[in-house]
Length: 120
Image (cartoon, rainbow, N blue to C red; front, side):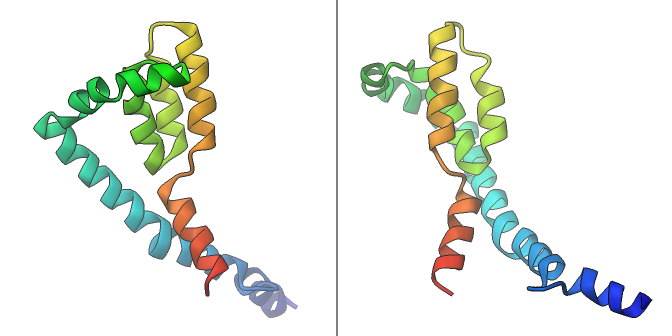
């Protein structure tokens, strides 16, 4: 009975536990690590404020400030740091607009996971 329960937990109906470990370490984690390495390089070389200034006019048409591009770039790796970074914006409508816009964006790890599931 214990062996059956252990096998059910480890393999499950579709191999849930083993699939989850595979998804985390083989699909999601490399994307997030690569994204934050590139983001760190862009930040070190000073391109992030330049991107914010360049995209300011375009984002004002949407109703956002140019500095909300930084949380949007963070949200490409994971939505949680992006939403936490939006709190630093000064005007409440920009904060709410940034949170709503970030929820529309999808994280890169999720996009790769969905692509892997749709095209096996």
